Amino acid sequence: QVAASMQKDVEAHVPSYPNLPSKLICLLHSVTLQADPDTDEVYAQMTLQPVNTYAKEALQLSELALRQARPQMEFFCKTLTASDTSTHGGFSVPRRAAEKIFPSLDFSLQPPCQELQARDIHDNVWTFRHIFRGQPKRHLLTTGWSLFVSGKKLFAGDSVIFVRDEKQQLLLGIRRANRQPTNISSSVLSSDSMHIGVLAAAAHASANTSPFTIFYNPRASPTEFVIPFAKYQKAMYSNQISLGMRFRMMCETEELGTRRYVKLPIQTLTSEAPSSADIFNTFQLHGYDNWNK
Amino acid sequence: QVAASMQKDVEAHVPSYPNLPSKLICLLHSVTLQADPDTDEVYAQMTLQPVNTYAKEALQLSELALRQARPQMEFFCKTLTASDTSTHGGFSVPRRAAEKIFPSLDFSLQPPCQELQARDIHDNVWTFRHIFRGQPKRHLLTTGWSLFVSGKKLFAGDSVIFVRDEKQQLLLGIRRANRQPTNISSSVLSSDSMHIGVLAAAAHASANTSPFTIFYNPRASPTEFVIPFAKYQKAMYSNQISLGMRFRMMCETEELGTRRYVKLPIQTLTSEAPSSADIFNTFQLHGYDNWNK
DNA sequence: GTGTAGGCTCGTAGCCGACAA
DNA sequence: TTGTCGGCTACGAGCCTACAC
Picture 1 (spheres, rainbow over the protein chains, first blue to last red):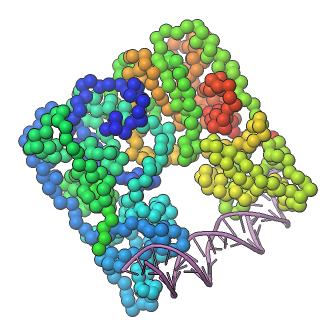
Picture 2: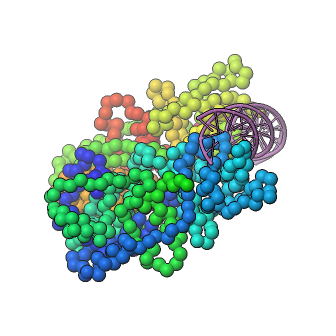
């Protein structure tokens, strides 16, 4: 992973860790799903502890987590048009989406309209005027919409997701289009140093079987580097793949509408209802997008 | 430095490097002065190679670099007022500063005005309308000024620097007031991993006397962690400071109008005229600020 | 059913001198 | 000399319908 995302020609500067194996079987101590406060980019902070031996229970637990259904709630997702993001007007809500997700309007009003409140991944509340007007009639979000677009720095091609949770509250998330890397070396932070740091921490943890912490961003990685134990076992033993064997890897990273392989059993760790941060992290980690009708 | 800027309670995760000395004498292979494209925060990328022995020439070269005069050019610096940064108006230019730095106006015009172009640290050109009007008469920057303020995200208390270089071209820099840290953990980048990476890279380089690269931000550090060799020698031997001795360290980091101790001999490496990036990096690394009259 | 454009309105960015510190 | 304010103007954000695909 480090080699894949690192700039070339600095290999000479990377210390080598001969005792760091290419695959590290770890116990997952904790997962914290997070989102960048500025960009809403989602990522997971995980504390991993390398293990030398493991019981059969571990495999069963991992399989259980894989089968664990995530909460199914109603939502819709729309890719923003030029009109949706221009300063000229508001947001055109697909008709069936509005009827499915939004509270129903009082059609005795002329025109029918209401105030909508939706909570984002940081639990910030956004307020919109929801109106049904025009010829032909349509659902629109007007007042408040442009603040959301500019606040989230959305452009045509990005997507928004409206979710109605089990408490009938509206949640609101975004998913940016695949653009060229947002901010290259945005600060004094050296990604090279960080990559070396991950290696050093992993090597240290591997040698001492002590825990270490990583930040894992599934959208930034060209492919998965954190694999559920059950998936790993299945790939290794049921398909008889052995070290050095050539094979073709399915690459579905960033394809729209497909599931990701990472499955984080965060919901199994708590009996409380998931926060909106959990929901959107889960949705985005699993790559929901472009839901229509 | 790592310990100083790291969050507490993660010490257990930091691998220890028993062979990494507390002071590392290094040969400076290259210095690249840089600025964050988003915030204009300046920093230096340095390639350092630990050395075990050094000739007396090294000390002389370091002293030479310390004495090396940086290019002296005319400039003025003003701390922005509430009026300067409000959307209500433009920028009030101190009279003597305008007369010293800006091209002189054609006073036959009523009112006297001209278009000014100034280049920032990224070589972006900013255009302003420079006008001399009001009662009493004053120099103002009007059209174009608000774009600059919002583009650079300037607030009252921040400073701007106008420089007239040897080619009579205008250069334009900023220096932000000391505020609470701008963006805490702005991204997926883990500063912990980065710090561990710096340690790992330094330890590896120290053991192999091989080069390593660091990013050094003088404004982020509570005190200096990169010291010119000559300064270090002087402190160690002429003042008879020995290891473990207690002493009081002059803390002038971030004081206004004082020089910093870091002296980067970048101008000695090239015979070309310095770029505006060099000039502003140099100015800001040396802490010029609040120049008046 | 939904994207875009034209028309209209109103809030505010931004230019000006007055005035005071 | 220069910071802030009230007055004025003009541009564009944003709500509306019309129309096309």
